[in-house]
Length: 334
Image (cartoon, rainbow, N blue to C red; front, side, top):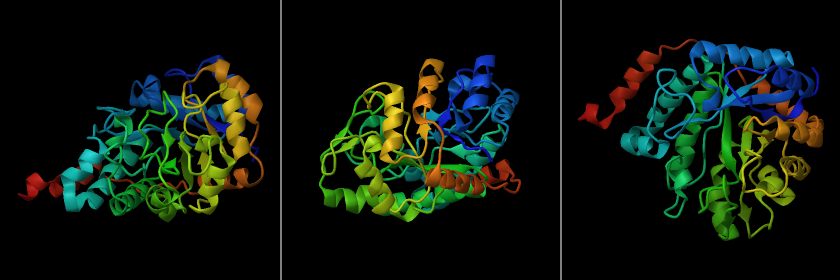
């Protein structure tokens, strides 16, 4: 097996251009990620997924952000439109664990039907009253036990459904009061608070195959954003104990300074395994790949292990799963 380029890249539109096909064939990125701009119909998505895999000559993973709520790239009729996770879990109350499993098992089946086999979930950030609105209702709960309980259901649903889960945002985004797509959040909480709550949310999931970093500064530990901080990456590996493939959050987000290529090189130097680049711009992707090159050593071993965790699931009846979910609703119970 040839070495993977140390990136997950995105096409610009619903079909590959000749330039993209040639570029992906040359750079052999580890995988790809899709967005709403890439989505038209199920047949089109299946064709695009096949084109992407054909360009690199292998069954490359194809990721998406399908959390539900406003972060949901596939919409009806391609996929179920869900409430935001925090609202959904609150609605189901004591039945939330089973409800979240069913929701994301349905999601996994819908993704695979479109050729997609990776999802950027579970999101294990712990919501607080001050959590920025871009993140808050994407969380599963506001206390650690709730997040751990529901997060495990979400991860299991993906794995059972043949979709690679990507837990995020390591080592914890719940205290951010700025949107890292636009600004760099600075977290000034004590080491004790972070260790006992935010970082602790990820420790029980250290066995998952993939994780994503957060673009924010933890002032107790470093003045660099976690994605490009060797100290924070060591904490993810040693304090949290995460042994899977570690990708950056989107490297083109404005929380980070410097060129995209410089950001990508800094993240690899800090200890990330793979750089996530999402906007599909060739003028950014080409210098990025020149700067980061191929995976090697432990990063390559972790990449192969992540691919091995991707299994072909048994067929499921989505309508039957939805009926089970509907039966859990408090309105039905009443």
